[in-house]
Each structure stands twice: as structure tokens, then as C-alpha cells.
Image (cartoon, rainbow, N blue to C red; front, side, top):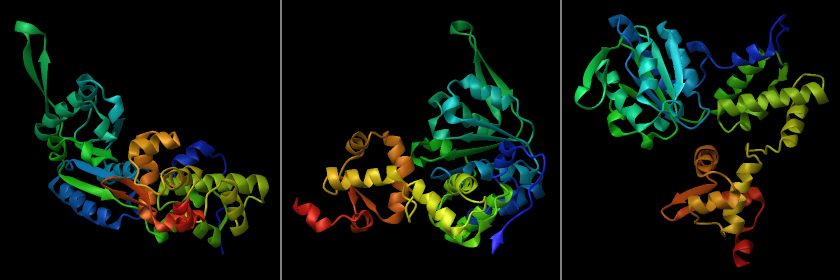
Length: 335
């Protein structure tokens, strides 16, 4: 069976690929527990004709936090303005954003844990009282002014929940954790993306790409695009089982979705540190990777696979990691 759609005329591919991000509720695949709870909260807000409560999404990179914020805004029928924590350096930055919001509108802040401390403190009153308390002037002539804000909804997204100060976390009406996706969800995502990209794809290829996508939609879409390129140049344009396997081999993506950098992390723990334990600083130095990159990009999936364990003394490689890399744990430990 082939999943196929006729080509559309006069479509710019860059615009087309942006539509891979779901915009409506029915297009958001997976995260059923989160969606069911959100549905209740949104329906209740609609019945009361009130702005939605502030929401906090947390989880690993690429699991759909930004997409979910878009879907929520569209479902509520309100606009959405977006920013990122690192871009909010001064209180004036967030004051400008908040004062330009419309009633009920959504303000989405990605990586909110990276916002400046003074910005976070300004958000406290904005989220709770829908007002900004500004200080005008300096010294004896300084005075305070309260600027009323429309009732808006702040949606924050973070990969590091623990870095958010408690006063900010407590001001969110609901907090949701996005987890890794199931294989069936990943297959549905690959089918949907292939249809949008107008790429014919065999069902066997759908399963192969889904299995190697690290249970993460962003990775699935990235791999699908690269396999599409391979099929276009080396094949007939149709993604078959053979084409998918050849492309993934060319990309150095193995059966479990591990890429060269993932294997570099495992090999460093096993070969350089005798299987561990090894601290994050030493592991970062040995692999020439930033600590945050190891923690946010590589470690979550390796933990999910059961290839590494976190102990009080550091990371250790498991028996499964040795077996996957084809290294004998007993022989290596004797060296």
C-alpha cells in the first residue's frame, strides 16, 4: 500500500513545510492525556466567556510544546504572540509585549526558564493581577504607576522545569508534561507529514522512519525530509522500504534511531571512563559537547532506551549499551 496524494500546483515548498506544525486540535497527534485535560479546561473557559488560565508545558525538545500552544490559541479563537526566554532581557521587553496584547490573547514564551530574573518578577503581578507596576524616575522624584492589562493567557514552555522559580510556577493554572510518543502516534505523524509534503511513501517505510525517530515528532519530520531528498536524487521520488533503509544508512541513523553523536556519548562513557560513573562536566569535555546539549538533546533518549543510568556519582553505561555497540563488557573491563 502507498500513501500518496496528487501534486498541488503553485505551492511554495517553504510555505508547505511550515504546515507540518499542526494548527487545529484534530491534527495534533498523540499526548492524549494532556489533550483530554486541556479540552476540559478550554471548554469551561469558553462557557464562562473568560480568558483561558495560564498554562505551563514542559518536556524534552521537539515534543510539540510550541505546536500545542498554537492549537490552544486557535481552538480558543484568539490570537497568539510569541517570544523566547533569552530574548527577554529587560523588564521593558516584557512590558512592551504585555501592553500590546488584546483581550483573551495568548502570549507564548518558549524556554521561559532562560528569561532574566527581573523579567520573571515582572510577570508575577502581570499573571496574577493583570497589571504592571512600573517605577518612573529615580531617587526622591521616583514614583510608581500601575498599568492595567487585558486578561491574557500566558503559555510557558520549558525543557528544565527545575530552573523556574517557585513563585512563577505557582502562578500557572495548570502544568502539563509532554512525554515521548508511542510508535503508532509516530507512524500517524509520518503519514500526515508525507501527505503534506506530497511525497509518496510505502507503509513499510512509514514504520521504519517512525521506529528511528526517537519517539519525537521533530526528529520524524527531519528524517522524513532527508529521506525524501534521497528518494528524489537516488530513486524515483517514492519512499520505499529499500529507499528508506539506504537513506538512513547514509545518514548514519541506526535501528534504534541513534546517530553518530549519540554513539559518541556512549563510547566516551564506555571506552574513556570504563563504563562510568562519570560526571556531566567530564563527559562534556570528553565529547566536546556543551553540558546543556548533553543534558537536553542526547541524555533523555539514551535514558529512555535504558542505555545509561544516572547515579549520585554520575552516568554509567548499562549492559544494553555495551551490547548495542558490540562491545564485550567483561573483556573491556579486563583491559
